Image (cartoon, rainbow, N blue to C red; front, side, top):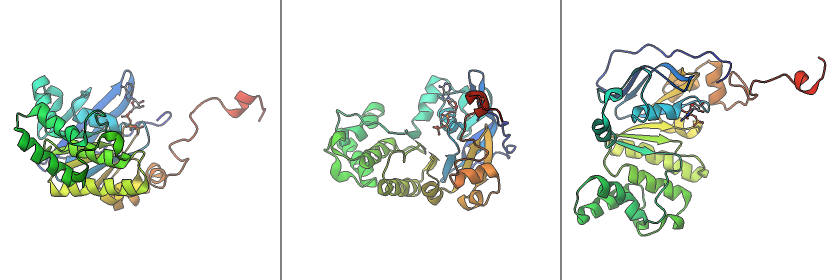
Length: 281
Ligand SMILES: Nc1ncnc2c1ncn2[C@@H]1O[C@H](COP(=O)(O)OP(=O)(O)OP(=O)(O)O)[C@@H](O)[C@H]1O
């Protein structure tokens, strides 16, 4: 965020086997511009962890660092104890098989049925018989309440249903970690509520670990165990939803209560009105 100093996040705590993902002192920037500065984040197994914060705060960048699409410029990212930054192609590939990713508009293949969309990663990665593929696909579709929609094409289902199909596809390979990048974007309030409950329910019933990037404070606070608010390269606040809501940090308050102005400026820095319009103060 222009004009604000980078925040340092709390120091790393001793490693804990309960954490599936640990970012220790991670610094990362695109080109010269720092995005994350000595960031320390822990994702506990079995929990739903929400990454929140103003646009451009680096939430998607954290997901990419976890998935090994980016490498930290300093510090380290560990997945189940393994250093992601040191992995070669084969190790990265094997690690990503243990992760499901659901990005913003979780695009489905438009020329394939719902069934074939969910079957795609199974056919791509595993040598399974078709009857077994069928059982797994129907199980995953059942988990998102769409077993009956198996023969429909993506054009025949609603946006909320498409998001659920993408979710079934993301869990097809039984991942340990599922990362959701703005899964609620563009959904109506009912579909949004259903999607959020589904994320929580799948996390618990399948024994997953979930990381959720979202701007929807109410729905996200309802389902998350742990909330991390990223700002200015670091962590502005973290804790249970209640703890974060109780934070007195003005930036966190602005975010939680969706105030237009506060430490995060509505106005992008630039010349004053007087300079632009020639009015003498
Ligand atoms: N590939 C890239 N090249 C250069 N800059 C990038 C790239 N990807 C992201 N950025 C910049 O890095 C910063 C962090 O981006 P990131 O997408 O991680 O933020 P975010 O918190 O997920 O934002 P949003 O909520 O808007 O999705 C932004 O300022 C963005 O413009």
